[in-house]
Length: 308
Image 1: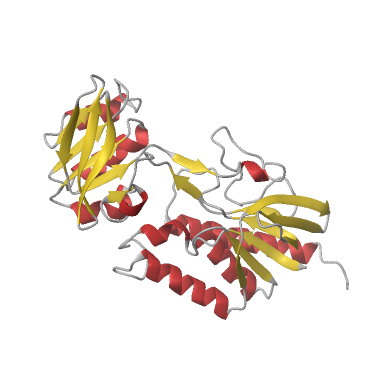
Image 2: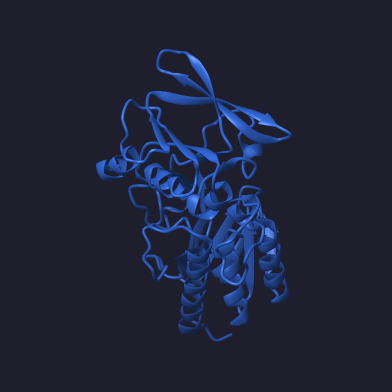
């Protein structure tokens, strides 16, 4: 029986483990894919406090080492179900068929960026393909980039990029943009921005494993090539929260409907990180959620402690 099981080993989950272990709780982290989460795709991070520059892999390794040194256990496993055996026991089941028991669970399984689904796309993440202008925009200062998407997120990314990039092209598959008219007006007024509608990105051109151009197809079926230094994909996030809807409510977007206190309506179940309904998703906000969720879980355990 663990005190706390944490689902997900990204910044939120690892921070939660650190705080829980410092409170001397017995902690297990279950990660389905990559220890460190999405930050491992970032070749350079310049907005994490205390580091002028650090790679995502380096930061992830340091977080993992710190958590292991504190005594947390980490296992690979895809969690598919969380069941309430009793008021005091949650049963966590993995795709591999293993079950674990805990008195409290912190779900920190993140949210993945929606991708275009094109051949070779995954291999270009961090090598020309990015998802966050705040995180990676500075690397393309004075260069030419494109943003794929037409909603508020895509238009906001384009506005930010246009402040430093030589040229920004916004590519939208619909014949109109769905983002706010104010954002569209800002972009139309900028000389270094080009807005393209009715066009889909249909392929990539590379050199030495780096993105050099995108192939695009218009509504007339004609294909053209656009050379660029970077491509920002902004077509939304996709949370994988449905398997846990029995213990934590979801909003219309599929995110956990938990507030800043990271609590759910289910006693002993907490939420942390990008899987939670929120406006800002950064490494720092994920870490903040992790600490809040862990402290809330520790309080829950202490208040419901059963004499042994």
